[in-house]
Length: 175
Image (tube, rainbow, N blue to C red):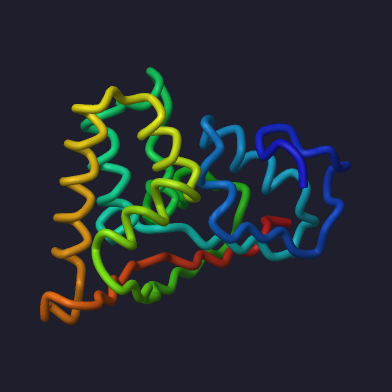
């Protein structure tokens, strides 16, 4: 727990440092990665699970960004789902890193049910809708509905099953 860019722990405090869909939302990727390495003991494990840029959530961020651009200088959270990006972030702080891509599925009664849930309860989407006027909200909603239909693996016009990729990166802290 704590600010991912300024963790409240001593150096080398943990045998394992794990982030599941968390550190990816820190605005300063380099600083957050540095903190992960700092608090992990040499030989310890750093494990990170993040949405991929090309997967559903990554594409949702791209869609939101067309309507509500991120603050200047802030990198997209799904970049943490790119093995190359995380390798560059962790750099010499790790001796070894392996990546595994996984897929999860969400099921909704309709594309509209998906939009309603994410609009009301998923922070990035909720904040985007709050920042828009009514015309912008309608436009974003329409694009999210289309995105849900595009990623729906059922494609039968009824209930939907949206598949989204995420990447699990496991690294060993350099000694």
